[in-house]
Length: 328
Picture 1 (cartoon, rainbow, N blue to C red):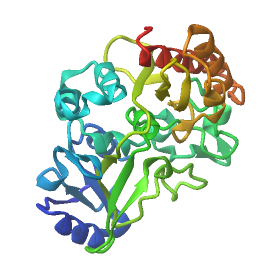
Picture 2 (picture 1 turned 180 degrees about the horizontal axis):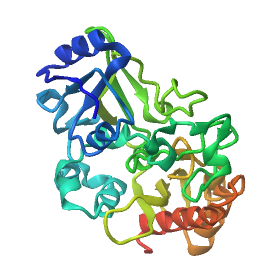
Picture 3 (picture 1 turned 45 degrees about the horizontal axis):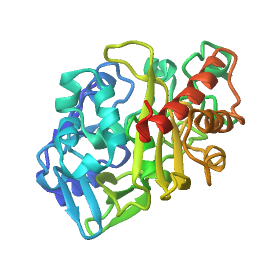
């Protein structure tokens, strides 16, 4: 582990000042469930680590006139126990899929949304794009767990966030603070993620001096939701593929509007308009859910070792839709 300076602000303004002083050499520490590992292996080598865990404004869940606001430091356990979030079952589906009490108790929503890729080439120090001597390791090497969508560019890793698909399905927004104390803005979570073209671009729109403070879900247009993750193991594991959906049904049970978002299959959460096109004006049945899954993966471009993920993604979409309508 490389030596670094440790800072522990107690307000957002202090955090912004400390981030600004360090610039690109700063790293944010929330619960540390992932950052500590990256520090130990020198995958990232910040000059300053800023521990935001004492900033009270970043904790908690509140129903406001503008929607439900969730602090970035809200834990998975807090999400599961919140009566306010009981109306968003897809979030609870994700918490239930994290089969480790330590992560549920300590892991934070903001930490999950900003989780860096689990790509083994990145974790071994080859950078986000995993290039070595002019060769793409993630394209030419073992790519069983890499992207099947959005992989025509240099990025082949998959977005690691488990909550992002469900929150994007709810059209959630995130608040970004910095780089100046007076700077704070809300943007759609769907627009937060980027597919980098160089290792300097990162996986989100966050710039030096900025950090995520809150997530907001406005009054929903759709009322049903669910998430489904395909896990290789029953213990602590990352999904091989996932999907989340939100649905609005008319009095006859026909779909008026919907949103389907796939996870762990692309460098960013993957919104599928093709899946939705198979649902509008139809009831959710095993047949329509299957058709939506097939449509969602019709433009997949698997790499040499991960074609199996196409079927897993189809299944994720189908089962998320059936779960949302209490058929699973």
